[in-house]
Amino acid sequence: MPTNLLIAHTRSIAIAAPPEKVFELVSDPNALPRWAPGFARTIRRDGEHWVVENDQGEARIIVRSSADQGTVDILNAENPSQGAFTRVLPNGEGSEYQFTTQFPPEVPEEAVSAQLLVIEEELRTIRDLCE
Image (cartoon, rainbow, N blue to C red):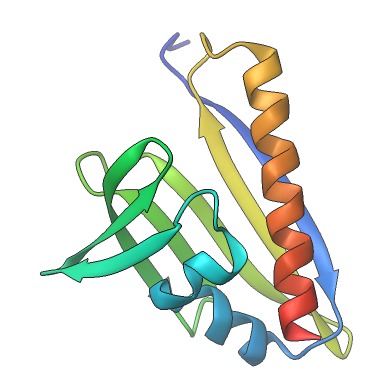
């Protein structure tokens, strides 16, 4: 079994809004500062990529989305296999928004837990913006 596997963590939230509305928000890179300000204090287009600015500086990302599949991936432009993989699903008359991120095995558990708390806050913000 390969030892270089990343450790995936998924969080999800039910949102009392149609999937189309949730997808519209999370698939718009310009909206990232509204719901993920720690990740993207600002964002600007740079050719086919986007540049986010935060406390760590600037990072180039790819935002890959499919309305048909309900997927929105926010990926590292230098290594597109790393990033956040998300999906908007129907949930009754509303939606379920799933957010998966991966961590190298050497990342300390405290750092993973802290990042998951940030993601959970971002999910609540998405819910608040959509409802």
